[in-house]
Length: 114
Length: 111
Image (cartoon, rainbow over all chains, first blue to last red; front, side, top):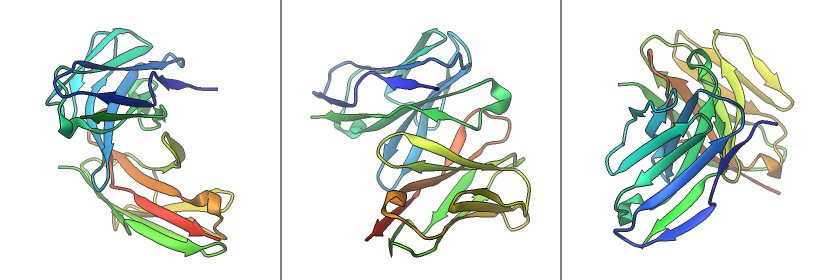
């Protein structure tokens, strides 16, 4: 069965901390995505990657960076966490670029920045 | 700019009711429209629609696309409390890898 695993379900951090959110997929997918989900705003794309060491900005990349050193792992980094980054973060993956529509999602990380 | 608009944003129904969820879109070079169900955390895939007028069905759920009027509907018949979820509609942008999502419809089914 396909699996996208996010390392933490709940995370509480302080303003100014560096935060790492990890995502691992076991499906050998080329594409990986980071979304955040906020009430009333839906899912918004932060960054995506279509290959190892490749990354592209999504709609709201400010305040975030990403790392993809291995195909199965895509990390989201908050360099200096702020309260407005409190949100649900969802990682997703999909196979090769031509069939990227069907995303497989992880269970999400609820991040609270105090 | 690609746009996906879902309505209503929330809905409360009784078990056994039939519901219709709406999704309208504006996107350059339309390829497909997708529906997802999000119960607790991870959205799960329901349907992908590419052709007008062809209904996709899975149990009590069905969906259809109208490419002329640029919308899709998701129908759920004989609703159950297990149908309570956020239903998301999404479409890939022109020549891009990412999906543009609507804000979702939160469906609550009460006994």
